Structures are given as C-alpha cells and as structure tokens.
Image (tube, rainbow, N blue to C red):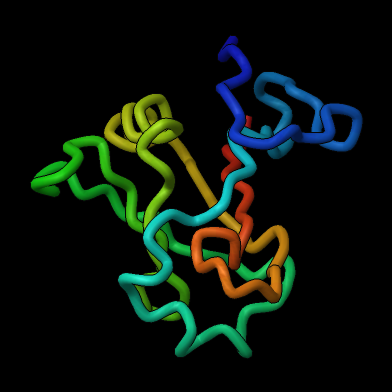
Length: 124
C-alpha cells in the first residue's frame, strides 16, 4: 500500500479516497506551476479548461534540478512541478508508475507563478 504523498495544497480526501488496486484515482499533489513566466503557457492559456489533461516529463539531466518534472499542454511547456514537491513524484515516474496531471484551476492574475493550479494523480 502506498502512503499519501505530500501535497502542496489541500486535496479533498472525501472526494478522492486512497485505495489500493481498485482503479481509483489517488491525488498525489495539488500545486501551482513553477516557472510559468519562462515558458510558453500564455500561448495555450485560452485552450486550457478545467480538467484538461497535461503531460508530465521527467528531466533528470536538468542542470538546476535532477528531480525536475516539466509540465506540458498540447506539446507546449508550461513550467515545472515546484522543486519542493517533485522528489517523490519523480521517483514514482522513474519507476514507471501511472502518474497523470490535469488542470485544476486557472487564475487571472498578473503573478505568473499563480496562473495555473494542477492536480497530479496516480491510478491505484
């Protein structure tokens, strides 16, 4: 049985129960995307709706963080899972565990680090 992973924001446990072998989604992390201002997220912003699937890509050779996990939408890099939350998820991805991500919320704000909140899950 896997333990519940650290979350950057509170996940609603009643809505997303942790179970083993049931095919249910287990919420691993709700977080904002880091580095939005350095990538192309604004290009696809209008296309991204709540629940839209995102692609997570490990970047073990990233010169700034060997545990880096890039976040993409439609082939466009949005940014990264924040470094303070990526270690366990990177390890799970390195073991080919079924990790997925979706848009949780979009925020109209001038602060790019608060533009998009995502939910990272796995199927248990």
